[in-house]
Amino acid sequence: IAAAAASGITVVVYMGIASAEAVQAGLASRVAGTTPVAIVQNASRPEQRHAICRLDTLAAVVTNERFGAPAIIVVGDVVRAAGVMAASGERADTGPARAA
Image (cartoon, rainbow, N blue to C red; front, side, top):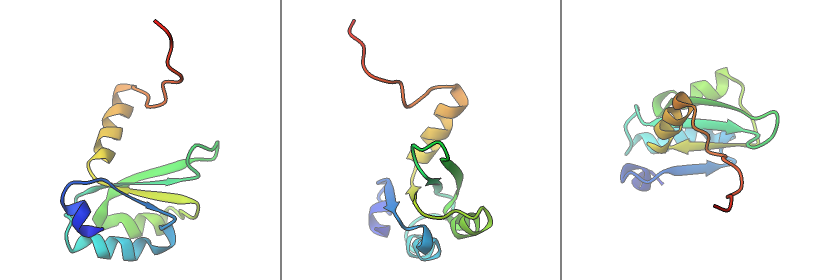
């Protein structure tokens, strides 16, 4: 997984929140600590919450913010793109396609 992340591929860890410290340590051998990470708990549900951090703070954020399952961890530059979209007011969920 670390080799894939080091090559620039986005890595998504499903149900790995309980192993966040191990995920961080495993990726740290090949991926910069400044790599952006998103943690998303209860994705697509009304109680969804998330945090954006760096790889070198992943385990601390999970602990301090009390993230639990179900959650995913997204590692890579795609996390930066999500931040740009949010800042610009763009939405990723634009709804169903409409006929022209």
